[in-house]
Image 1: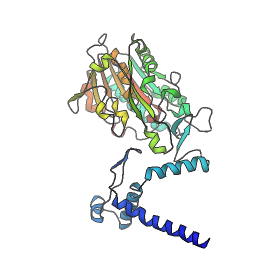
Image 2 (image 1 turned 135 degrees about the vertical axis):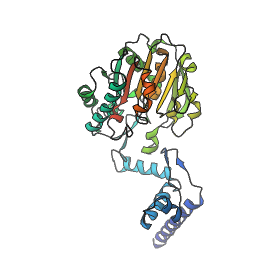
Image 3 (image 1 turned 180 degrees about the vertical axis):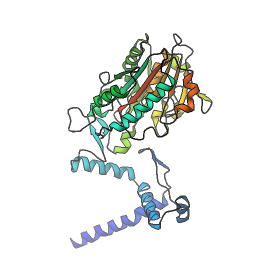
Image 4 (image 1 turned 45 degrees about the vertical axis):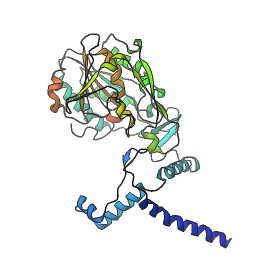
Length: 375
């Protein structure tokens, strides 16, 4: 018995010695494709003090600790073991706020931050009043419920009620803007299992609902879209939750008008396609849709039936939805107010004064303090 205990102690001591050495010998990873974030890199004391002028020696040692944790060998495997142990051995309902239910991964957030929602709506009102009030187009705010709204039904997990956001919208959003919730049109099946976003292959009824509220005669469901697959992918929650789950299939919908449409970036002065195949293997595959997060861009469709124009103020959920609206509009101006001030693009907005206007936002963004830091 004593010999066995001594052997275990020696093995443990060897492991304690080998792991830090292996961390230094193995090449450092710049980013974690699983967690989708940059990893801490080694810095000498001089380099650290140059970047952190008022730092102390204890701060430098703390940075070394972060470096060792980020560059730890087999780190992702150990994270998965830890998450599984907490969930199935300790019977914890979540792991660092991430949870799994109904075959989907989610992140707990059950606090309604009314002030954040009102601040966002006040911004939308300023943009609307300054640039579109009195225009001839149809003006609409469409609210996208968070995936938790559907995941937590009939479960022990809490979630923020979508109706709280609608109540705030009705009380604070400009009366000239119609307000609708997409609560009834959506279900859990519309969302990726490993990601917070909705899945484009299911969004034709959502596009139809938006077009109907914008008084547009075209219905996307009547058009011949082709369903194409780019293989599988693991969404944001898969890496952050560290719980095993089957990958989602990455499917997109194609149409001749989408293939022919061109996306013009007035900031970079360049053009690109709607679907960005060069982004498929990026750290966030969702960037395949319209290149991901961008301040402003203009989509031109020379094959549209009619000359109606549309302005979409959106968050990341708009990336996969906007392409489905292309057959209905000759031009679509897409703006993300998280990355650009309306005053900086007033000329572009002015040219769309009589266009239809769609504010398309998720409850996740409305509920996030500081979501619009530069506006």
